[in-house]
Amino acid sequence: MDLSARLLESLAPWRSAPAWRVALSGGLDSTVLLHLLAGLAQREVLPPLSAIHIHHGLQAVADAWPAHCHALCSSLGVPLHVEYVQVQPGASLEQAARDARYAAFAARLGVDEVLLTAQHRDDQAETLIFRLLRGAGVQGLAAMPVNRVLAAGHLVRPLLGCSRADLEAYAQAHGLRWVDDPSNTDERFSRNYLRRQVLPRLTQRWPQALNSMARSAVHLTEAQQLLDELAQQDLDAAMASKEFSWLGLPQLALPALRSLSDSRQRNALRYWLRPLTAMPDSEHWASWQTLRDATHDAAPVWQLKAGKLLRSHDQLWWLAGDWLGALQPLEKDICPGQRVVLPGNGYVYIEGALPAGHWQVGYRRGGEKIFLAGRGHRDLKRLLNERRVPTFVRDRLPLLRLDGQVMAIANLAGLQGTGGSGWQFHWQPPTNDQGLS
Image (cartoon, rainbow, N blue to C red):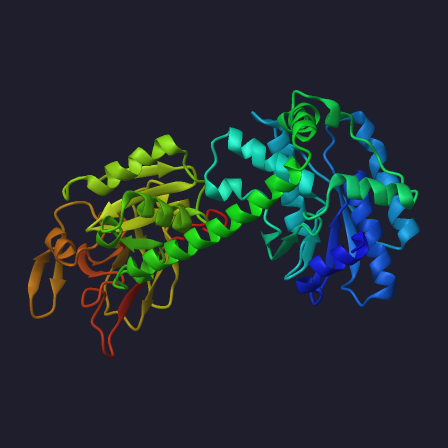
C-alpha cells in the first residue's frame, strides 16, 4: 500500500470532522504530510484543509520559514495561518517551545476540528527510549497516542505507522523542498542525541529495532487501556455520597480505596488525578500512604502540582483554584434578590422575602450559636460536627446574620432558612478551575 493510501486509511475515523488543520513547520515530515493531504483532497471528499505555522522566534534563521510555508501552501492551494508565540524561559527549552506551540494550536482549533501532526515511527521510537530513560511507567512508555483530545478538538498523528525513510522517499520522488532546522543537529538536546548517536547504532546492530519499539509502544498502549478500565471499575466502587455534591468538588470514598492492593490504589488515583494535575514521581507516592493511613483526628494533605488532596470524614477531596486561597474577614449587607460576591469564595443570594432587620453575610468567628425555630439557640460548631461537614468547608460556609445573630447557614438542609413559603440562603461555592473562578 502506498503512502497516500495508508494515510487515507489512518484518517478514516476523522473524515466527518468540520476541518483538518496541518501543523506545518516547513520541515520534511510536515511538508510531506501537507503534500499528501493536498493530493488526496483533489480526488477525495475531505474536510476543509488548512495549515498552521508556529514561529517561536528562537533563532534568526527561522524568520525565513513563514515565507517558505506561504509559498508551499500557495502552490498547493491550502490556506495558511502563521502564529507568532513567546517561549517562556525554563529548565527545558524544548519543553517550553512545545508548550507554547501546543497552546497556540489549541487556541486555533474549533469544536471537533482535527489538528494533524507529522510524527512518524522513528519519532515514536525516540519517545519510547527517552521516556524509558526517565523511568516512565506504562502510560509514559505507551509513548505518543495516535489521537487525543486537544482543547475543543482532536490531535491526530496519521503517520505513526510510517518510517522517516518512507517520507524521505516520497519527498524525493515528488521533488519537494523543505527547510532544515539547524537546532536539529545540536546534540545538547536529548532528542537530537538519541536521533544522531543512539538510534543509528541500535539499527546497525538490530535493523528491525525501530519496528520492534513501535510495536512495543502499541502493546503498552493496550496495557494502559486495560489499566484504565480496571481503574474505572475501582473508582465506580469508590464513588462518594452525594450529600455534599453541591460543593462541585471531585471526591472519593476512602474505605473503598483502602480495600484495594497498594498497586491498584495507585492505578486508580493516577487515573482519577490525570485530568486534574501532573502526576507525581515515584518518591512522592509516599505522601499518599501518609494521607491514607493518618489517624481520624489528623488533617493530612497531599500537595500536588496543580492542587492538593485532603481527607475529611473518610472522604478524599481534590482542591485547586480559589479553594487554595485564604479568606479575608467578611461582613456584607444583603437584600433579597441580590447576588453578593464573596472574594475568592463564590457568591450568595437570598431566595424569598426576608423579615425587616439588618441582614449581613459573613463567616465564622468562633463561639457562634444559631437560632432554630422550635429548638432555640444551638452551638454552631456542634451542628457542623453532627452534619459531618468537611473540615475545609467550615470556615468558608457563609452565615446569614440578623442584627448580629446567626439565622442561617448556606446550603445546609434545615439550617439555610425557614423553607416552605419563607426564605432560603443559597451559596454558589468557588470553582476548582483557576481560569473560571
